[in-house]
Length: 375
Image (cartoon, rainbow, N blue to C red; front, side, top):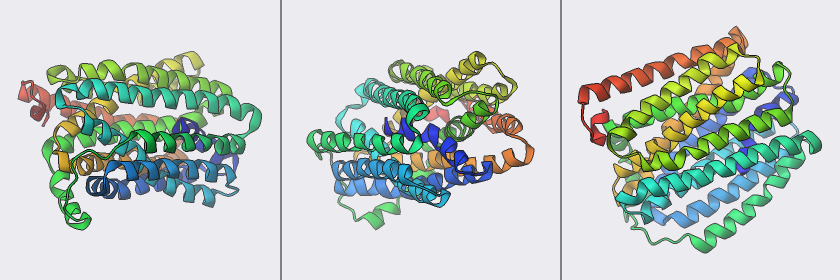
């Protein structure tokens, strides 16, 4: 819910403070650098010290970043809050995913990941809806500060119900980090991660950062945009549970490139539309595509990890997601300022189409049902 309020509204808040499209891209860059720079470290820390302490700290930082954003008076303050949010991202969301993998056997993880990502999506959808509606009446600052209260509930729940029963890696953190290179270069994890970077690039860049600005430029108000995000996230949420169930074998592998194609279609078609109804249709297509890749990609990565390095593996996967969802939107902002936001949308679709095509080629070449054949 906190992220559902914070992320879709950030570009509008920055825009109202006089930020250019390039500066809005900088906000995404800072978030991406923070996520990218801390994902592997937080994964190693959770492997070494346990999930609970990292998860509680992450939720606490979510509250700090939300309240701090609400109190911000300058874009410089927003940049600082994005740094904190990046650390909160890796410590809370990534660790939560690893916790699910810790307590569920491999044969039940698809179902468990489907449930977990569905609940996550439901919270983001509700946050997007409430954030848009409440901002219309109370303004950005009040909504951001009020949303920070949810962090208190999250901290209490995590402290009470998350245990540290998973096997810990007794290796010191710095030597443990030396294994990150071999994990990143592992072919199955690498191709999953690159696909995740492309999916997050469209979500974190186009959907979260620039779609609200484009929608406002053609006359939509905050409440309409909030409803559109809520519907999009609801669609993304609804496919996560079945996505987890059907993630095994051939079906799961083919859902990955199919979801990238849906993501690319959204980027290509949306800037040619003026109708809110049609824009919502393609936003829903992106939401479904993102929900499938989010669930299945992480599940495959977890199934390729050992118990004592699970946090490190997801940290590696999340590093690519941070690059796609945070660092690349910076360059997207520069492109948007140079060639218009509509053209930037269309240019973004090209690498996503290429990524889907390469993945399909590898699957056809493998012509098998095992996860390893993805590469």
